[in-house]
Image 1: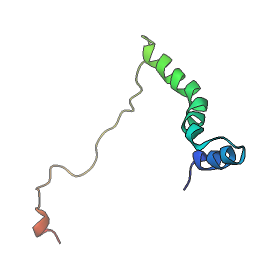
Image 2 (image 1 turned 90 degrees about the vertical axis):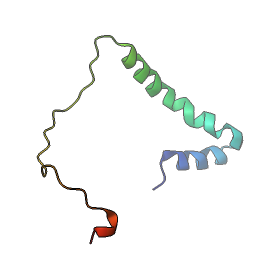
Image 3 (image 1 turned 180 degrees about the vertical axis):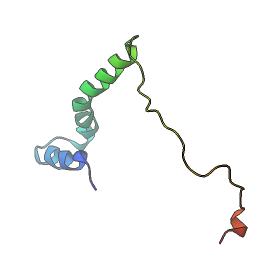
Image 4 (image 1 turned 135 degrees about the vertical axis):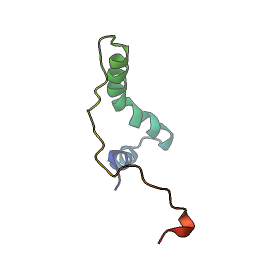
Length: 70
């Protein structure tokens, strides 16, 4: 499925922007998000959220070579 850049490109082309400018025009709206992520990285009090997970699958299993698999 095409993302928003596909449709943005069509609009930029219809508006007469040169194709060389498309990359810049795609990046400019994203800078707010990039800056927000950067500020989060600088925050000393921020913690990385790691969900607690417990593996409940099969215990240790023997390795079966590819040639012997069904």
